[in-house]
Image 1 (cartoon, one colour):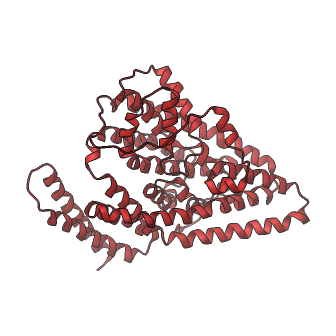
Image 2 (tube, helix red, strand yellow):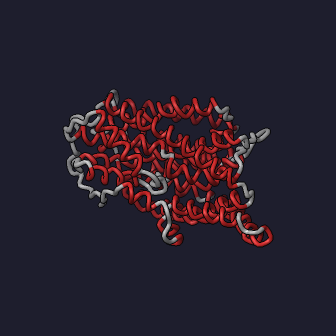
Image 3 (cartoon, rainbow, N blue to C red):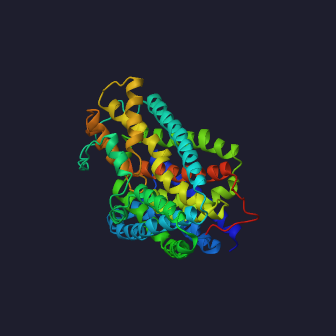
Length: 457
């Protein structure tokens, strides 16, 4: 069977399955469960045949997500047992983060001894991050005020999940937490920003050491960086299992019922994120002349991983590798990407703006536009550094609710679909940060578009 014929069969059976499900959902015709499941399974079989012929890891990751959805729908209890696979994948990824950040940042700074460029990249990155996240914040507020998704919301019956504990923090707490008191402790807790700060200071210190004495450490860091990129490639072969398991657990846990009362909020978020991509990120990419086709190829795998695992951190190693292949120098990738994971959370910032106003709407509390702006700017500050932790924005939202005396029960309702919302906002975080590396590289005049086709596998 040729690849074109396989694609044709995928289209036929996928369309047939969609029609059958629509007929059943709108009660136009009675369709037996066996026929519904059978149509989905046949479509999946052709997807798998296509993946085997394509021999692409990205394709396997995307198809594993479809298989995960099917397992979660048909075997929800069994799907919960698959959580062990997604946890193994996330743990393996987390072992890479600190070594790869440390090695690439130190080599990028000390290897070139251009400390002025480090400072220049720093202020350019922060300026870009703050402009883009402020626009995301505004889009989130506008979207929730247009749809009024929180008005008339009720907590679904029998929904009794416990909320995690959260204590409100001051701006002083967040500033202090940027600086590591113990680098091993920061690595253990997965705190990206303190690791970045330590690595930058270490790199600057090494750059000031006499050349004959620093070469040994530089060679070690270069070898460590190359080894960790190879380590990433090995782990990525496990990605389809980890990603598929993560999706199966999510679908099996949520089911369909929880969506009925919260669809308006879900659609508001997804719509606002699409608007943000189309109105902000795409124009930025066109203005700085990013090669869009190659850029989409480069981010497809990291975004797929982030979407399924709801963790930007899980996509970081592959995103760094692919941005370098795209033509961004390693020193810029190593500086901008991890810094963006703390300061350029486009999707999370938009979500927090939207969710905080949703909580007030659901509780019947009227907030003036000025009060909304004050609350959301508070969220912007408190959200720094949460990208590596799945659903960490929920903790930030709880802390903000405590600070502004908002009730917690609307957050309980959000918890029901938080995994689905986290998938979207985490994906946008990764897209925004990958684009930021290209923007800063263009700004520095160091971007070199690769000639010909590039393999991002």
